[in-house]
Length: 330
Image (cartoon, rainbow, N blue to C red; front, side, top):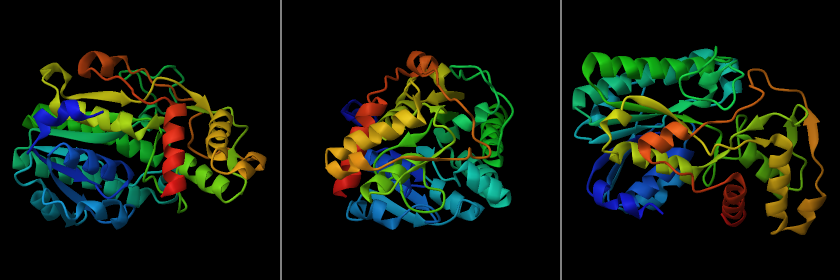
């Protein structure tokens, strides 16, 4: 699927921050397969060593165990790198509501450290994980990149600040950046455990244990669920594009389709029932809405198509099928 990028990425030095996390480890795996020389920077606060253990025997893989809140560590990690894929962050809207200071320290302070280090190292491009939460209270659908609302959580504020800093670093220092507004990413290696587990791995875990998943609200909220392979494709497009006008932009990273939480739950149940018929009998329960959640999310991916040549390869159904199989056999 990604072989078309091999010629441009072979022997390129690429730093992946948060490389032991869900998205970061998938990026590391694909980049190594394409012949890139990959450095992973992670403090294992939310990432896991087992996500990257298969890469330890690869001579093109380097692990730096460190924290982006330490500027010296960021400088060391960025040295001699061609590109930076910045995935390191404290995710989760509820986590940010419970601990806004930690979220800001990592997502804003750490982000600024990485920008400074990338600038000082002469990195060619700095591609970073932005967020669909930036759209905030804007009710417009589909979401287009130049129309946003007011953020609804501390997490959303930090991600918007990232975009402002990235734009400023281009205009002030000439550092080329691209922000990718991720829309509800899911797939292999996404952690189903912990207080802030995302909805899909959490529901998969519940169904596999014959436990009832809890839908927040009546289940009519909608999301543009995006399989990890679509996200990897966008990152690769950003570091290989020869379209200069595509740089120093932000892009929705999504499928361009929306699914209700009820539909999502039934889809997960359907695909897992193929492995265990008893799952079809598991009931679904409802609870209150979560603070800070936006009711509906649907991305326009027209800009990414036009500027980068992006074409999503995985629908929600295909993605759930692949993810369900990975969780079942892992």
